[in-house]
Length: 89
Image 1: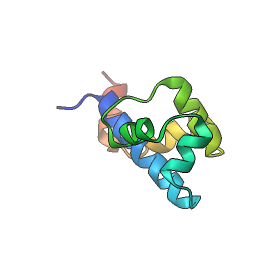
Image 2: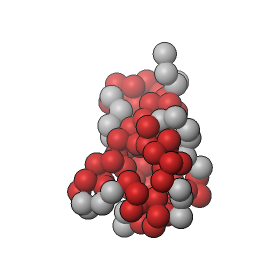
Image 3: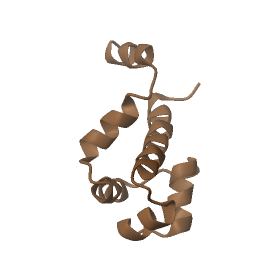
Image 4: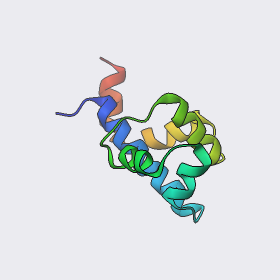
């Protein structure tokens, strides 16, 4: 079974892709604006590599969001019952 952290990382990748579509922005444009190589951004968004926190902060800024808002949107993608179980653990 995946850990909560793994599920959150996957949800974050999905949320970043949604934010890109909403802004009519490409992954390459995001990578360039965030100062990350396109291959690295691709690995982050495909879940092949964890995104470093400094990169996450830059990505949120490029998307015009605070890191907290971006993380909250990603967390909302995780099943509500899973969130409840973890809070009570």
